[in-house]
Image (cartoon, rainbow, N blue to C red):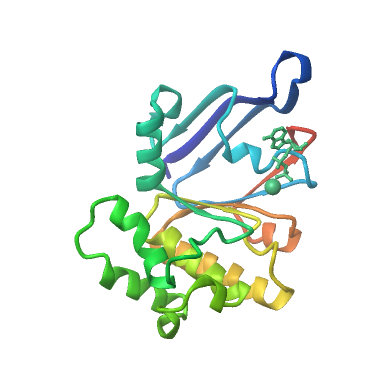
Length: 216
Ligand code: ADP
Ligand code: MG
């Protein structure tokens, strides 16, 4: 299997000289295409920061060094190659479920966004709720919409940052199962940030972060 993501000597410092806070220090890891990876570690250990802009080091995604891209190019890579699912869903409140799923496709200039978006909503079990707004959906349903949206571009990599963190246990389990299922169907590489050790055991690779570094 080929390498899809390589992180080299990554560091992140928040703030400037007088109040500098080093959150990540010399992080190195790589991920194979189609692999699932869990990033685990205590709250505040730097897991979310890992998905953020870095201060030092290099991130290579599908053989493209992200360091060499300008803001526009980076936004394009994000929109075309990466899907994101967040703890707090981050749906656009003024758009329906269907419209939320259509957004990334429209940003890409796809002509017919309706059919593939409906198919995705059906895949996550929400075909009947496509015209509802986020406020009319439960947390688990909102997360299903977010998952449909994340997969709409057929991303090579899906990042899920504590995707079940705001859900009750049962709903969380079904969201988790859905992520793994679609991941497998589509051959997406899945990087999941989680507190849940049971979930982490189901992935190919576990990366443990503590105090800003990887521990083994
Ligand atoms: P985790 O996702 O593992 O809970 P985070 O990556 O969110 O942890 O945060 C790691 C550390 O970085 C925390 O101490 C947090 O307070 C700090 N941090 C996160 N974002 C910022 C920011 N924008 N400015 C300053 N410090 C931040
Ligand atoms: Mg976090």
